[in-house]
Length: 481
Ligand SMILES: [Zn+2]
Image (cartoon, rainbow, N blue to C red; front, side):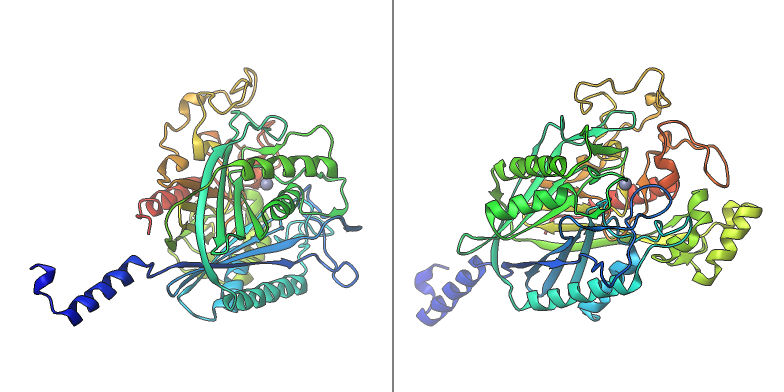
């Protein structure tokens, strides 16, 4: 049928319909904010997390800790991205925040990331005044969760149309980040996602790069966001809007390449990464927005985690292997039973965690609830990411690379213009170690360890790796919106 045969009112209606189809039915909207979450040292007692078996009392504040928040909406679908200048944030706290903000609405999704700063308050219950005593200040936690939820409520009234553009490149890690454990695999990937309003002004910039925020070491007594603080401040100054830094695959262990632990070095690294991110030329790509996740049960295999089960139950529910819930009351009796008799495989508790997948325009963010070894993300056993260093030291404990998995690796599975792997997403289970490299002596205290193999003692166990990377692989098969 030609257009001539169509009556004028019908033609007008058809034209109106096609115009409606051409304009985005689900335009992407965004709003961003920064919430100060620095503990008030005059009224809140906190312990610095990150090093050794006990916390350090902070003597002051070098730079504020923030929750940086980007709220996105497409149609009725809403996703909040929250980046916290904290060492970690357990799944129970993520769920508390979800309840406080979403209040039961299935349309509101929350993705929480902790930058892993080693000069922030203990939020995991592992760095209190004495070994085994939690350093968490629950009043502080409740205060920041309430403030973030309030900020999200306010942002819902400030949403405005944005365009999403992104870029993906690599940054030579020399002088910025090094690998303290063989094999030498440093993830050099740098991802950027920009959200700009229709007036061309930046609403938010999301930066993804991988390295431990521990320029300031165990001698430091000042609260600081470490290099991510300097990074975000630089991006915000240069491009406007809020900057959200999402730390990537930092296990294995990627640590700052510095000779001295001071604030100048944190500034130098933060500035260098910010400038590299700002120099990437972003390209527009899509308005899609979606959040998907898979819940996974993981066995608590690490003897140390079993001994200090109460810290884990501060942020997780416990289960039997058959998915029946265990009351947190049993945390101490289980620990004592483990200490005196050892828990059999059948009697070990499991915890529930979450692997997530967030699509925003050209970017696909894989959220892993742990500190993922870079090898699991990019391989690199052939030396392509060792940046001039031998992949393994000839006399070191890691020599049998023939047992290493062949791939594809996590990053290979992310089919998007701007792939991002985000560690410490919605939970923190410690290190995710490739199974072939998980080497511990069987001991209930886990104190004896091979030189250079510290990470196993801060990992929930070897089974978690297969369970969580399997969940990631299934999620990554989902088509982008
Ligand atoms: Zn760490």
